Image 1 (cartoon, rainbow over the protein chains, first blue to last red):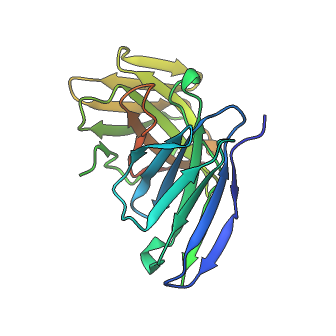
Image 2 (image 1 turned 45 degrees about the vertical axis):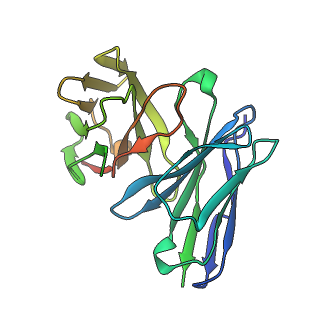
Length: 113
Length: 113
């Protein structure tokens, strides 16, 4: 079974630009969550999608948005990038039937310059 | 307001000895607790979990203890091995039906030869 796939692995963007990150969950998993990891802040929850609907949202500004497609693939978008958005963005998928354990992708390292 | 707290940013333990990683939480609604292990440049991997109806769960060298009255959990690794050197994240959710997993900031474990 293939794991969670995130693309791209690395990205460099300029302040003010926007970026779209992609996540393909484990086959059969319908829940996809996004997290931001920065030094000293651990993993901060961004949002969670299930069956194309956002079910949970963390405490991030509206510049951060996401969506989920009918095949459970998910995208995350950040508009008007700021230097502080530089982080590792992690996607996790889970199957509710198997418990709340989430399986993570390798992440997308975003650097804003 | 951090709902899951790992107060030790780092911990060094001699190989072969016991490693004890601690975690405190503030939300009494949390019903399910998880530990994740993260190596550099990789996504976190699920290690072990415990439901609030239990006070102990064991899986090989890893044991998680939960003290609900103290809102405290700990991960014991015994014996510690060099490959255990990683960042360990404590996480919690309100139950199997909720995929909003809240993470602590992590504890970096160094296993010394």
